Image 1: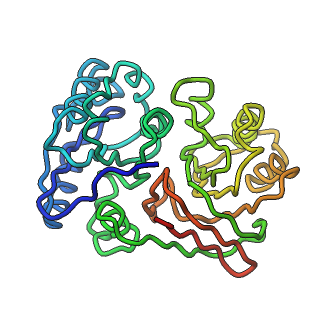
Image 2: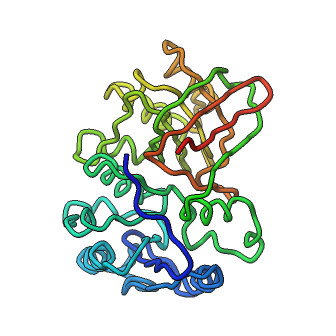
Length: 302
């Protein structure tokens, strides 16, 4: 997959909110941090805007994201937050100008709909990255926030994380893709569907009931998304709940049960997702993965 041009001092990052509402003060703080790194910031009209659950009406959010995609002076688009709403506007967008002048699309969670759409239709890399809520004083010097600035400027990316007793050891190399598990299942059968053939698949999720994790994995499996992987990387699975009548399996057991007939490596504990430590991953880029009994390493190869 091709990648947009890397950013340098003076490049412009546009901030827009195509999904859920985020308070303006969170965006302003993120803006101050980004400006301190030498970037120019262009705020969209949906920044701080609220319409019920969303950051504006469908029409307002579509127009704001479209203006960022079309603007030749914007070098990257950072989403204010995820939540819900991207699926309501994705089919209203025109990517003609974006194809003529590619730019980094940055975010995760509900934004995965847009990012999968870009990978599937335009063969272009995107950044699964923290959004404006991640810019907090206690995180400013953190390695995970620095990984965003490294990724967007074309620096090497290498992540080493602890072993898990649930890991399936091995080595793999391939393009990494994926994102939020519920979203990956949601877009199956659409023109934003993720292609997992010969890929390293990354998944994460938040706030699901255990049986629904099983249902989502079965959805991907029935759609053929799990049978031709190079590897499976499991990130944050947070705020999960069980039913009054227990499902009877841990979330790790659920995932492993759905890939038990395949022999590719599987690793857990990847520090990406709806968690405080949320590293940036270049989806669509070639990576190498090593899973041993002591640790796992994911490394960008290009």
